[in-house]
Image (cartoon, rainbow over all chains, first blue to last red; front, side, top):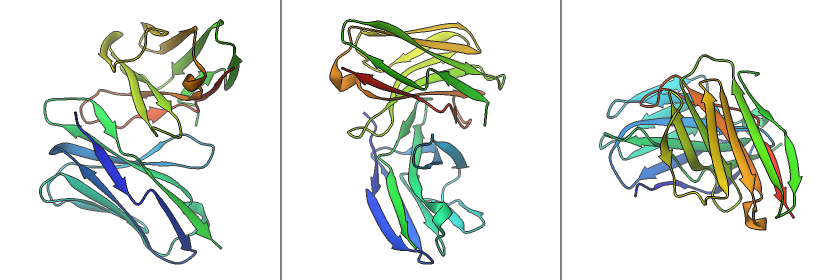
Length: 111
Length: 113
């Protein structure tokens, strides 16, 4: 079955440093979504990428979908304490509407 | 955010108990989901309902029994659970399945003693 892995599993950064999490699928994806879960909270949708090589930005967050549509990344520039949480990617295969969540990357910020 | 609500928020039950988790969405969505979140498997899809019909049953043990009486409500009936079933159970909804984002409820923190 489809597997979606994320690296790193944990990341500790100083406030102001950049952060990147990588998402890799064992199969080609039709689209990929990113979610953020704050400590003690629930996953909240951030963005969806559909096209090969697509890049989208939300303020300090940059999302990228790989050319082969098997990987994706989320980059945060100049992290802030509000960025703390676990970031999940979630991908869909072609012809299968099931959304498979990645293993997540937990980000902690050192003030 | 109150689009998807879940009750109870916390539940402690013995292995011989029967309990139910409730989820309600106020977003007019037609697909609803149950996920299990634990330290071992961050977000594990359990069941999917689309237009009140179960379309996905992800090899979940029969001690978990879902029910979707209408497009706004989703239940998870629990009986004879095991301690390893202790986890956060999240409900989510979406407008459709294929390309739409999912909106999650706050979850029910379940502890099986």
